[in-house]
Image 1 (cartoon, rainbow, N blue to C red):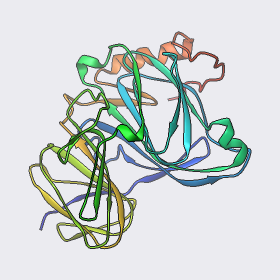
Image 2 (image 1 turned 120 degrees about the vertical axis):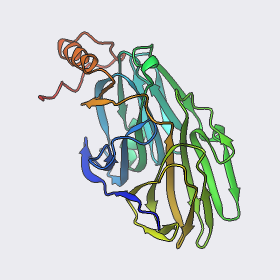
Image 3 (image 1 turned 90 degrees about the horizontal axis):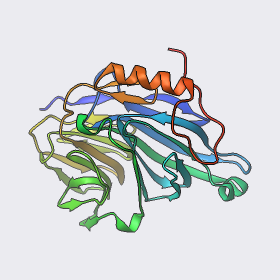
Length: 288
């Protein structure tokens, strides 16, 4: 029997939105390029309320936002101004300096709405850490889908399960949303060196070992594994090639060199940073 690394996420709160955060953790710092994983728990917002993550900076990473329910407005210092709906991919590569805003669209704020989704950070390869920023939006209809024998796989980013996503990832990546009907089986191949499963809903087994909902399970390298759905299940499978060296994470900054993080902290504190057009509010640098 294979011993699996199981990570139980810690609860957090981001501007009033409850989340679960399994990565990074003491047990696992990264899976492929993924260094940060937030599950935005299904939340009902009353009329007049919503999420408003004010202007804040990033370096050395790409953020990927994927919603199951609700909408968000993305704005950044490149001039992007994009409504992100459920099933879309919002992909932002920070490069050496970018700032962005994520908030509830006014129309939803007025009526009340539900929000549920994921936001992950993928560390950029060293060759892209200090490159230019980039943003792209990928509507749900552009993401490849496989739906057969009770197992539905939508490839959010990267390659896997004979599918390829249009999202411009910077290193070998696997990120798939999977829905399985009761008593179906999915073979998770070893085509990517590092892989993990996060169970959103339902009960499943991985090579006969039970998986808990809201748990992240890191798969052993070089081993294909069978996922069996004991009930209807909703989960994501993600990973890719190992990072090209360790990464430091400090607030919203990711880098292979601590000096880059210190430089970014000083620049943001001094106001020496690209700004989001039309935005004046910002999140100040937290005390260490």
